[in-house]
Image 1 (cartoon, rainbow, N blue to C red):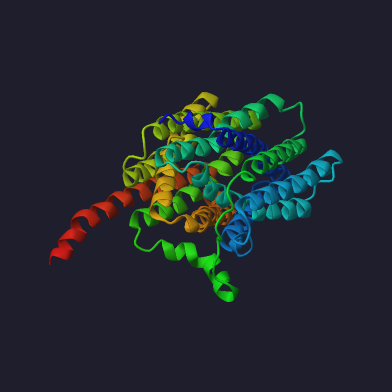
Image 2: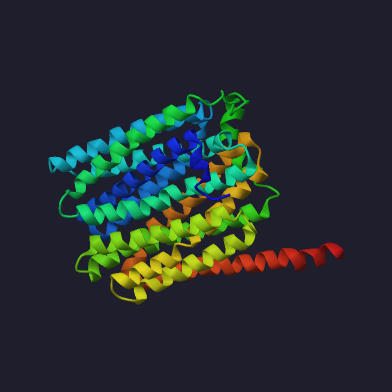
Length: 411
């Protein structure tokens, strides 16, 4: 099924449009936070990014204690409204030149904590919107493309408004898109059937299940476990090599770093969307092979980024590296939705988020030290090499399982 076919269904189209807008606004938020932090503390901006990753990790790990009692729609609407209010505070601070490190730290950390509750609820809602497996795979591709499309629209708009709209007012764009997302979620989820209870246990057992139930469910799923561990490395690479490392590198080497960074992100988004359209339309294929290939392609791209010069080089390399996103993410989403029961989906997706943000948190914490010791370009290239090695490790692991493990069982 072609990836755009689900848009013929109005609820899917409406919810998807809201997420495209919110993801585009989030791109403004990411750039504004990084730029504000580097203006305030320079290379130590990595610690603010670490705080955000820590907030996302904490929210992913413990957020279910609260949100497992709510309907998924209620969780998403509440998260959108709270995030909109918080980023508006940063917009006002920027308008009156009152931006400070304590304010940025407090709000960035809180926004991250809240954000961690949104995506698991969204992913747990998709099977209700697309119950047919073929439709659901295309819908996965469609919603997976939202952040990837935002990497085209967001940086493109940033490059256009750079110099017209103050960076501090990027937060206003983000707040508006969060509000639109809340309206879209409300319009769609109020028409869905009442969900079965997400949590049947009570008391201490319910708290324990909310925190570790997803991890327990992973037992007996080696491909999923490999995918999550490889994601741990890849997201550390994404954080230290791309999101932070290339910002600092371009600020040192480019005459117009914000435009160069925006164009690089735009090219990455174009590669993401092109790969998504293809892979979501041809089916899930062999998930293990796709997971391995995604890590090798991504690591090679990060390795090559600092080796060339100019915006064309950045855009070409970023666009090719972007193939990794849909290649790995659609594979892992397919595995999660086919290997686990519906009542575990939000928990399992929170596990995935925990792994993602644990990798980013570790990378952001060590980034300033690594940048000081080894320099920006060597650190970025080493991060890319680590991602490639995680892919090659997957080849060894699955080869051993197929041949070595079978031989051991025969003895």
